[in-house]
Length: 305
Figure 1 (cartoon, one colour):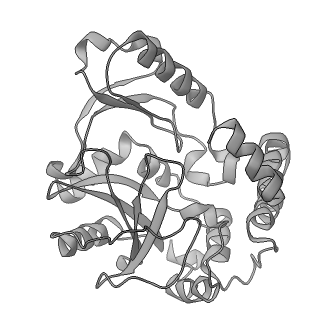
Figure 2 (tube, rainbow, N blue to C red):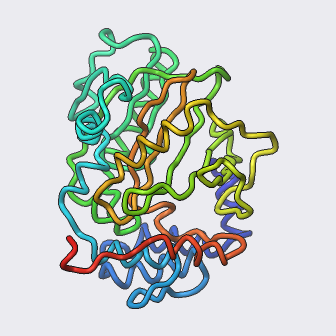
């Protein structure tokens, strides 16, 4: 988001500005519970009922505070997660890793192909797509990646899995689908190992990203969350049922996890695992879907884990 768009958003949506100030100024000084309540308020315009949650978004806040397991960090670490996914479903679903480093200066760009993607392993958004190895491209990537390396993503939303991940950099093979311009994300919402719905993210190359939600029969669901629907038909991928099956394998053992997959020219690839979709701070429209999806999420009892 450029500076002009940030200013426009701050004026039109002061609650967004409040959330930014909360995260950047007060996050490290607040208790987890207090921060979670106020961040939820900034996004939802009401406080969550954390002790007796009913909606999907409220239950995600409960999970942040109560479902604490160190192994979750390996699942959201972009390097370590590949090892776990490889063991569960096989190497053929893994986007090739071209290298892993602790700092940007360790990267030998002569050993990388002309096109590649750099990612920080410990956060969300630390991605630099390099279409060439020009000085300008490398300089821009260095600035973005080094900024991400200094960032502890845990303090953004109090999502425990990100707290203790070692910051590293990986390079991945550059991937593109039949459109030649973008990759479509298929994000599967799984509850106790059973897929219930998904959304498809399109138009990621521009500011106005589109999210379209579907059930497991690929029927379009009648709600919006965070982003508008695409202005074109989203076609069901040919290997849709296989994608659901893989998502359910990867989600086994967790009360809720979102499994992100790519369909690239008819081949399935693993994207990432997410425990807290939108960090539970973005409303559904209409909000009855927050309650409906919340019914799918059965919170674990202490003796269950």
